[in-house]
Length: 212
Image (tube, rainbow, N blue to C red; front, top):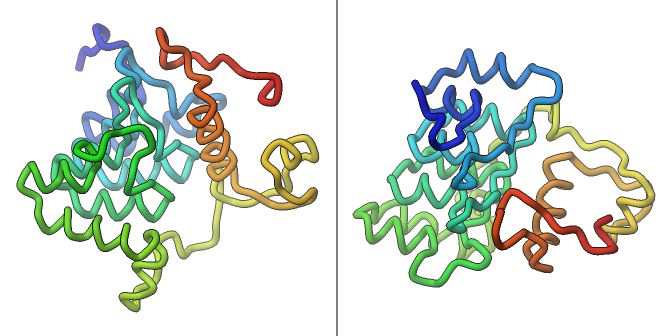
């Protein structure tokens, strides 16, 4: 499947084709850039979420994919899954820390609103319930359900002791343990908060003195 005009990586193409075997093989490659975006800033996770390929979304998230990464238009994987009505994929993304409300997007372009506008009322109601409950874990607990990702953490979701420099940067106690996925989310939040993303190239970050 040729997508060179969009700058799609092999991982994005495999996600598009719902080829879990190939995605798994690529993720086992040393140094794989799981969040590498195409010309529009979309990643493999965006692609899998948009097409409702839940198993691939889960595999990517377990290998450290940023489920809150925004493309050049501000859309996250959850935004695309919501707009296309993929409820189980939305639940999967939320279980890995995806935000139901996206920073920087206007109120009329939030996942809940988009899902309702596209005719996915049940999904929109679910997103509203998650938001009103204060998040996915709180909502699932209120429903008497176990949150996802119950098995023993592994790979990028397994907590490990962060360095003293990183602890200082994140404002965490020295010696604290964090998963790489959690660290990635915290750094991405810092980048968005301080507008460090290059306005002409969304894939480029202009670090400030603290991030350096």
